[in-house]
Image: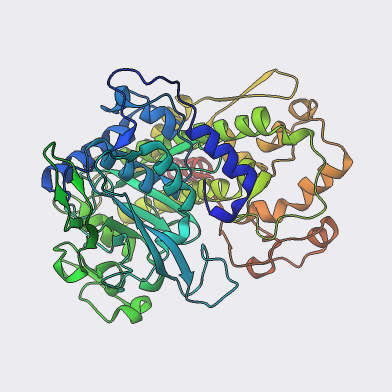
Length: 555
């Protein structure tokens, strides 16, 4: 349920999924959306935040499973229905669902137009989009069918809805969301984190350390949990990155019936100037500059100049920003474990539901492997894998930075031990042992991998849905690979896609529809759409092992 133009077959599947309830309805089941409040008050917003927090903390791996879990206090009032939503749908679906259950008004952007001009993809427009259509939940005496309305909303929504100018402030075609301040009051459960490379996540918790925990869905409807990192690109305000909060709305001019139901009226959006938490800080920096000069913005806190991501964490931490490197290693490894478990589910879905491994390899890659539709969108993993590689790279870079900070006696580093490389390595090994990832080979036998095993095959993991499950998990050992049924043609494709696997940058604006021969021939580079020749270094354990060995030799 992405763009309405994404294909009739997908729309039918989504429609069937959202309408599978058993009639007659059971006692206590809600099927109508009646509006009884004309705006969201502080208690509603607090309830919304608590709702999102519970879902984020639950051990569930799809939005449907989360909605059916004990984390959702409204689950017993739902008809028997399956909710299938991907990344862009999640914020809209959850906000609309909560509004339905609490008799609240809800409105949404129903049409967007690219500022690039006609013919472009509004999901990846270089100049952002503007709102050209709005819809809202009708306020009627009997209410409206909630499930069909939820379907309408998620079938309209795409990442294009988030790609709008943060400075826009139209009274009629207003954006659903606004740019918030960068502090713990404004960045909160329910805040959206928009990655302009085509992904949307929701904040479910902000830790005392300032780390922002998020969850997001994927086209195969699997859910993953991680934290905001450098893969969320900071851009100019015209693209709407990174943080967005729901704009307060009210139902004006409605008539209240005797039973409390509101009828009629119109939705009015609160202008930016009347939202206390509205701020362009993420674009203007601190001290603020013109948002059009966002690339030159400075971020200064307590007299210290920082890069944006360090500043963000400093602003959201309780007290002064401090790094506890051993604890950070545990958290980073635990997050990677969650990411790998989510990838396992995605590969299993491709194998069991998509059955793409038995299909012949198409003659060309999609026009862009990161932003497409059909089989490739549902069952491939290039975007997911790129974010995974970025997370490994960020852990590697952060580990090296901790060592540098220790050598420089940086006051922000809180470490009282005598062997930081050794303690980091022990934390790495502890979490590595606690995270076995087991996949089933084509012949049904099982292979168990650790995080460290994945490090050594990270750039061998195939994102291509037509490849065998062994190659999806980067097998190269002849014994592990022996059960792979891929023939010579698919093997050539796998080998030719290596430069694309080396690439951790998601280039949505580059033509990538190469044939096998074109892919093999090159040239290579981000701008070519055929990948890069070399993968970055990500092996934390090798770095720490080498460092501890060198330090031992020096003692």
